[in-house]
Length: 423
Image (cartoon, rainbow, N blue to C red; front, top):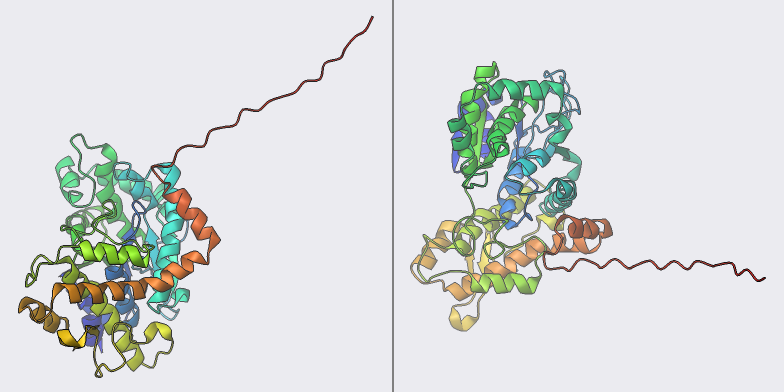
């Protein structure tokens, strides 16, 4: 059983550091505790489906995820999250929760990516998005708690540890740790150098056994492994997923609208972006469309299939990317006209990749099917947005239109009655 859980926790990951820590916990019959954090800066995009789908694996494996209390005074509580977390207060018999941890403080520190006046709105926007995505994946929202970093990062205890860390870490190590995550500028601000240290301390103050993030976080993870023990704290394990390539090459980025698909993009815009994406026939090495199918679409389809086998019911678990005539076990169908070979069904991503490499699968057919699949997973999220007026208001406040002209203030005209004195 422990081996099966470890396999579920680590499958489809690019790298695992300290896997023995997780194995030892599972061997003792305990539930590992983890966290995944996100700084509310740019608009979240479809690349977030990679970690959020993985969170579903963590929950199925019994990983506990818990949010910290507002003031940290006793670190004996058990916490675990993947942007999930829930207070377990010294007992292993309480139900586990997943908590989305939102780094509002980190968002500001990262070279002012999110000005203070916008951080609060963007944090609320991220909460709406994450809950909508979890609902679309069939992850019970009752097992999710969203925690803001500022709820404990501003406490006396946390700040004292931060000062201790600052007295230990060199400028070189701090800059190196944040090189892949913190925005790099010619004259870096001191705030960006604090970022890695705060993320390391979060592991202790959230009480987790491992931290989960993208492979771009690797330098921060190894920084935490080096420096937390110097403060007398335990070294944690670190799990990393691969980064999703952008549509125009490089990683999918919130700051580049041409490289990513927004959760609220219209069906027409999704099709337009996919149509314009680079997808050279036979090229499987530099292909964002194929990579997205591997990292997002196949895992979502596999998650739905596994949940159905476990007896789950509901539209969120029914086959999504296949045709009614697809053989059992199919995860993705390329639905094309009969004159071009008709529908092709895939139960494994590697088979689809091989067909594309051999040119048995044409880029046009791949793009068409991937665009249709993306719109299917976005439909419930877009619907949630359209039905939620509060979310719509927050979206405008969190990401104001940069081209919008400021409203002109109307001048107030005051009419003053004067007394007429007649002699």
